[in-house]
Amino acid sequence: MKLHEYQAKDIFGKSGIPIPNGQVVTAADQATKATQIINGPPWVVKAQVHAGGRGKGGGVKVVHYPYEVVTATESLLGKHLVTPQTGPEGVTVNQVLIEEGIEINREYYLSMIVDRSTACPTMIFSQAGGMEIEEVAAKSSELILKEHIDPAVGWMMHNARNLLYSQEPPPPFGALRALMSVMANVYKIFMTLDCTLVEINPLVLTKDRKVFALDAKVNIDDNALFRQKELLLLDDPREKDPLELMAEKYHLNYIRLDGNIGAMVNGAGLAMATMDVIKMAGAEPANFLDVGGGASEDMITKGVEIILKDRRVKAILVNIFGGILRCDVLARGVVAAAKKTRIRVPLIVRLEGTNVKEGREILRNSELKFLVARDLGEAADLVSKQVS
Image 1 (cartoon, helix red, strand yellow):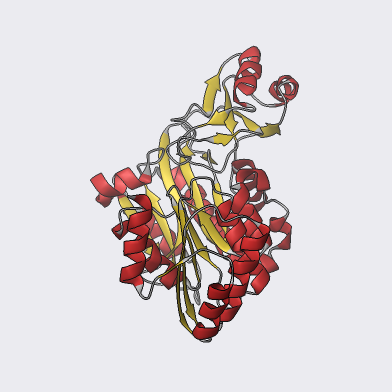
Image 2 (cartoon, rainbow, N blue to C red):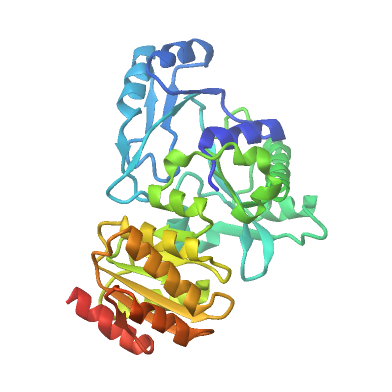
């Protein structure tokens, strides 16, 4: 689950990480009041959306007069903001954050993630703050420093020193204590709130050696939300794809993609292999949909309905290996979906495993028109014929 920048900064502020004074507004008339209580000029007006690269899309504006704050707010609210991370369709701006401008002397990048290669929480620090960290990693990897943390021991002062004194040149002496404090608090937030990402880019140093988090990203592990109920209240459904939101309601693992072949699979590994099959056939997957091992007939029905709501879908590939999810349960769900929603595209079915004969019989006795694939190779051939 992603948090908005202003929500993440609220967490930062309560945790002792310095942030600029700011206020969230949802209407242009609120912007004038914001300039009266927020130090300026300059002021920074920032679109609040779940996407990076806002500056490149015109979602961050630095202004110097109160009327410009109002104008910038009006230009952003309701706008479809297109950034490198949104795709051409963009996302709608429903709120903006107005902040005081901070005079920047130096910029750093700081984040906390789980490094899958070491299975450890890992802090990343770089003096190339304010830039795309992916580009820095590709072109100047020596600028990116990592510190792996043993969860049984936790964050220690030497971890911070390892990162700070490895910089060339190192941060000014007077700023070291402030930077160490920020690092310790980022680790605390990451572990306490079950985060998958805590990122500050840029973390800035002013001329008087004060530290501020000018941006903030916090992502929460969805699997841990049962113990983060207060954070769950911060979720903004307006930022989610409507089909993904519908799938979430029925506990389906669905991610909408840009292709034209819908897929329904049980098991994440099989789903990835199925998407490879679709691409090998010369098509593109329209979604990732893992119904899981314990899917019910109703969940299968909803899954098919969700796939069909995507008008780009030209065919559906159902690839089920019956284990916990029996093939007959899957077949009944597909038939039920066909009765509720007219299936307007070719349906390709590959069933194997528990009760496969019963599942095929249910499909065969239905009025549903479908194509049977005996293996993944044949499934690829059938998919290829639908897009050729």
